[in-house]
Length: 274
Image (cartoon, rainbow, N blue to C red; front, side, top):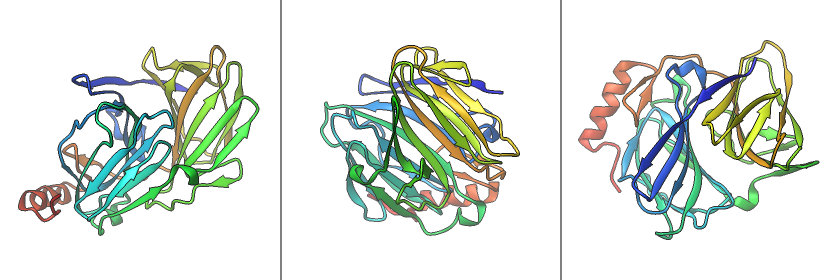
C-alpha cells in the first residue's frame, strides 16, 4: 500500500528555499539518506565536508543558470541545466556549489545516497553527466529523463558506487505511466511541480506530500498519473543497504567509530581545502 511522507520547508533568506525529504527512520528511504528539492539564486552554503556517503546534484532543465562546482580533489566544473554531478565522498572531501550567475535561479535536487559500508572509507571521486547525455524516453503524454539507472530500455551512462535509479518525469494532464520496480527495491516519488497520483493515492507539492511504496518480494508495476493538471515528479529507486547509519549531518557512516575518525580528520585538515 502506498504511504505518504511529509516534506519539510527549508529557507535561507530570499536566495534559497527547499522542500526536504529526510526520514526520521533511516530505513524508510534506504539506500537514500535524504533529498532536498531546492531553488538557489546566490551562494548559500560555505565550503563544507562530506564523508561516508555520496552527495549528488541534479539540475532541472528550467534552471536559469548552471551550478559552479569545486572540491578539494581539484574538481572545477559547471553543472549545466539538465546535468548531474555525483561526489562519492568516501573517507572525506570538501566541496562547494554556487549558482554560476548570482541572481539567476538554479532549480535542483540535492540527493544524499548512502555508500556500502565497505566503500565508506575509500578514496573520494567525482562523476559528471552532461545534459545532452541524459537518456530520454517518450511515452503518450509523458517524457522521462533517466540521469541514473534505467527505464524503458535505456540506461544512464553513469556507473555510480551505489546502484540507484532517478527518473525526472513530466506528465501531461490526464496522462498515465507505468513504473516497474524490481523485487526487493525501495521506491518513492517526490512531487516537483503540481499534483500526481500513485495507484490512485494523490500527492503534491502544495500539500508537501511524497509517496513511498513498500518493498515487495516480487517485481511489480505501479501506475503514476496526473489526474488533474500536468505534473512533474522525481522517482527514486534502489536496493536497501540495510546497514546502520551514524550521522552528524554532513557525514554518515555505518559505525560510530568511523564517524568520529572522519570528524577528527576534517578538523585536522586531512580532507583538503578549497
